[in-house]
Every structure is written in structure tokens, then in C-alpha cells.
Length: 414
Ligand code: GDD
Ligand code: MN
Image 1: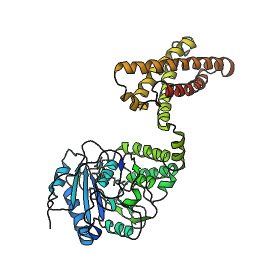
Image 2: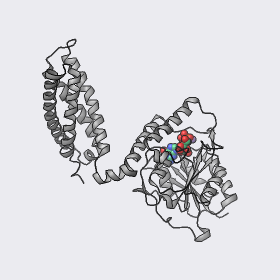
Image 3: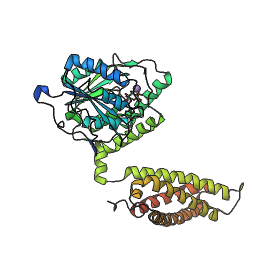
Image 4: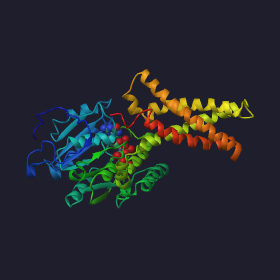
């Protein structure tokens, strides 16, 4: 067995998450070139890594010796998984290790690994032995038989989960169902879109800028790649023996965020959006912040003007309620909706400037709000909350439009 002469860690690419058409510094030519690059993303897998590398190497040496590489991509695990992996490279020359210190997250780890890959087939497998290694051979065969993408699936013949609770099964299927509703064109193509165990031809995803959130890299591959033929192989998702899963409730939020993002940026809708260039994400955030303002406004209005509380006159109460809601909204819009723009205009002076603009625009909006409230409450619907709700809606349209053009000046900022 030859030893690895360059015993150093792989460099992490920076910039867009894009895979090149041609492998970087292809190893050898023709038959010698590496066929499969299998990425093993890891985070705190020190108890598993040696075993995983050993099992995978044995298996692949039997079928495609010399034509594969294993790429461990570790996110600077505090248990120093990367160090252990690196120490294995003398024994396993086909093993390469990347230690990421700037970026985080499962999906981007996989893509950074593929960016360093020399293979024409790119794969991914978990580093905790929950994905049965034998399935690799079947996946590889499917690709050789012409598939662009071969997915290990829990939901086809031979697949399953070992001992999941009813709740967990339900959540998993619920997530899939939600995905089918939001993105049928992507999730409808495979039986297990949540799978993190698959292989894809480099040519199917080369050139596309991937933009994943969270855990579900496969969605991104299908959504943005040019995947023609798909194959599926059943597998049983085993229980973890060592270490623990990194899945938290945040992954559910990320997943929904990812679905919406893919929905908006691919297919017909994506093409339309690129043409119109409307900042949908920003608009949604602005709307959500405005929505939080409604509660602030309503609560203060209640405290000040309701006959059962302070029973102040409606108009002055509304002015105070409105101004407090404006403060609330500015805070969230500056910190979240327009965070990217604010980051480029730092310092309290700049922030004050933005606040003054925002407040002025919103005060005009509040004037509009008052006018509409007055008219509706006195002449149309004698319910202060319904009247206020309609008034707020009218003012919101005004606020978004003018703030978009003036306060953060989205269109002008480079
Ligand atoms: N580099 C890196 N960065 N690796 C990570 C990160 C991260 O932020 N988070 C998790 N990993 C690694 C883990 O060390 C493990 O090797 C693999 O990614 C999967 O993480 P787990 O936390 O074990 O996930 P799981 O077992 O719940 O989920 C698995 O099954 C799902 C099937 O529904 C994963 O394979 C998912 O990808 C898959 O979708
Ligand atoms: Mn796992």
C-alpha cells in the first residue's frame, strides 16, 4: 500500500457553492482517474470515524480499488474528529480530510467536500454508520447503468427505519407531505427526499450554484441540478451506536425555509422573479415585522383606550400606540429585514438617519392610518379593532412601498 506523501488537510474553497465541470487536478487519465468521491460530513464523530473509514475502505477496495476517494469534511468539531481522521490518512491513502473553520452546516459541508473532489461521481454518506455501507455498491451500479442520481431510500422495497417511534415517523412523513405541497416538482421525483445518502454524476450538478439551508442537500441537487434519470435503492436506517444526532427543532424551520427558497428561485416562478426582480424575501420579512407591530399597536391601544382600562380618548391613544409600534418595527427591520443593508451603513449616526426616515414615513403612514380609522369607525364599522385592522393594512402598503424606495434604499446600494 502506498502512503500519502502530502499529509496535509484539504483547503476549503471559498465563494459560491458551485461544482466545476472538470475535477480539479484530475488524478491520472482514463482508467486511472478517480471514479467516485464519497464525502463523509462529520461533527463530533470521534467515536465513529475510524470505524467508518475502515468499513468503507474495505468495501470499496473489494470493488473499485484505486478508483475512489473518501473525503471527510469536519466542521472543526470540539472533539477533534478532523485530527483523528487526519491521523488515519497514512493507513488509508485514499482518505482526504477537510477541516472547516469559517462555515458551518451539513449541506454546505457536503458541497465544500465535492468542490475538492476529483471524481466524476459524487456521493455522500453519514459518518455515524446509520447508513449501511453495502448499499454503496448498489448505488454505484445504478450510476454505471446510466442514472444521473442514485438515492438510498427508506421508502422503497427493502427500505425502512429500525425502531422509530410513531411520533418520529409521523413528523418525517409530515415533512415530506408539506414538501410535496410546496415543491411537487422536486419532492415528487424521489420516494425519500430527506435522504442524506446518495450519489450523483458531477455533470448533473456542475455549473449550478447551490444554495442550501440546513440538512437537506438532496432537495438542492434535484431542484437546481439537471437530473434526468433517477434510481432508488432501499435501505434500512440503522440506530446510532456512538455519539449523538445533531438534529434539533431548528432543522424543521430550516427545512421549511429551504422549501420556500427553492420554490421561489426555481421553475417558472424563479424565471418570473428574475425578470421582475421583486425582493420577495424582504417583502415577507417586512410583512412579518409589520404583523408583530399590529400586536404591539393593538395591545397599547387596549391598555390606553379601552373602557375597561384607562379609557383615554381613541385618537391620542392611537398616536401613542402607533409610535410604539413604529419603534418596534424599526428595530426588527433594521436588525433583520434589511440586515444586509444596515451592515454596510454602520454607526449610530447612520442608524439614526435610517430611523428618522423610517419614522417620518411611518408617521405619514400613521396619519393615513388615523384618517382611515376615523372614517371607518365613525361611518362604517363601529368596532374599534376591526376599523383599526383595516387602517393598519392600508398604512402597511404605503409603509412598505416608500421605505423600500427611501429608508434603506435597496435599489441604490451596491
Ligand atoms: N460537517 C458537518 N457539519 N457535519 C455534520 C453537521 C454539520 O453541521 N451536522 C451533522 N453532521 C454530520 C454528522 O456527524 C453525521 O455524520 C451526519 O452529518 C448526519 O447527522 P446526524 O445528526 O447523525 O443526522 P441524522 O442521523 O438525524 O439524519 C440522517 O438521516 C436523515 C434521513 O432522514 C442524515 O443522513 C440526514 O442527512 C438524512 O436526511
Ligand atoms: Mn445520524
